[in-house]
Length: 107
Image (tube, rainbow, N blue to C red; front, side):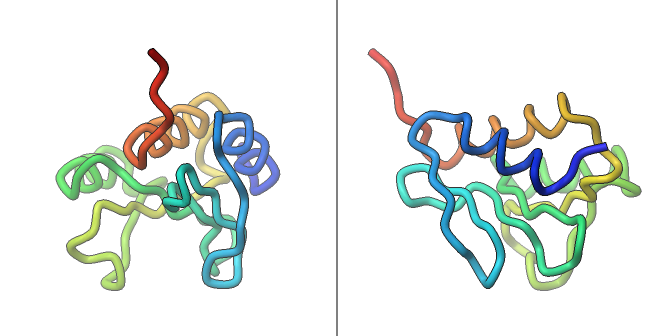
């Protein structure tokens, strides 16, 4: 079961990632682009995805874990219930969001 401390640890372990408030909660950025943030609803993480289609694939695969709200209609952003996922899955989702949002490239 993952929690907000796990989000912070995993996100900040990625190169060039910083933490800065976003909408009054902890937000994680790479190249000043938000990749994830803690939602106002306790235990929920806001995560960027590669596409809107991928967002809906996650929701369809496990609606007890992933969901959205009308606020995020048309955006490649999914909401995730932290208590419903393990650390490995959370790590994978955060790393993917980090890559989507412009992770530094190595030569």
